[in-house]
Length: 249
RNA sequence: UAACAUGCAAACAU
Image (cartoon, rainbow, N blue to C red; front, side, top):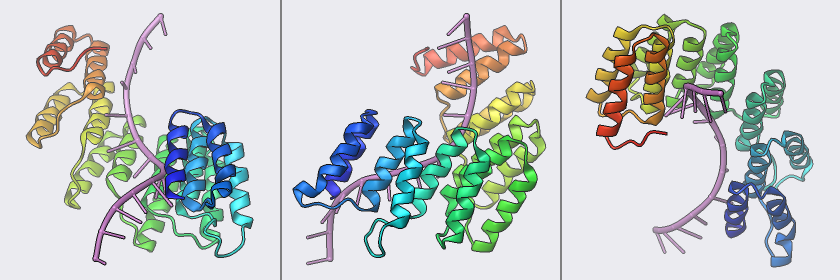
């Protein structure tokens, strides 16, 4: 079953999801039974090609599978589909599924919460965000690196930089180290509102922490500098990139 | 006493 799950994932990564589904169907011929991991892998594959509808059907099948079959949906099953719904912009459906999940006694974890936190914060629905944070606290689920980065992204994209900076500070107070994605998110936010002096400070802080900017970070900077008409600075970024051996795209 | 599979975060162009 582990071997088959691995194969299913491989096919899904190549977007050969129909073949992956066939493989799952044929597992019994080899004396193997798909379990929750196998099914979750296939569901992720379906979601990755935008077939959320079928993913949901699979979830329903799993829900009605018999007890102890190792096919009952778990936190991964739900989180995968909730993520897909969020990426489709269907936050209402995502939220409904989250409700269903908790109602059936499955504990959401930081992954699950992160998807909803990101979705609602991008929408600017910060009262929903507060409710979720509250619920996390209640369950004793701590915010992880991704959760903070999502919140920072949400605040930045709603031009609420002070709150974004607060989150950035808070995560460090809790002992979490911002990663390159976190820095890039904040830098992008600062660039877009043209707070270029803060941008420079943050870059300095970033390298001090031993985090290297990547192509995404640099693209955010170039884009920001161009928007502000700072051609010289933009070109300096390009020089820095070539110095560091990052090829331009 | 050992091995193995599933979900979450950032930028940009015509």
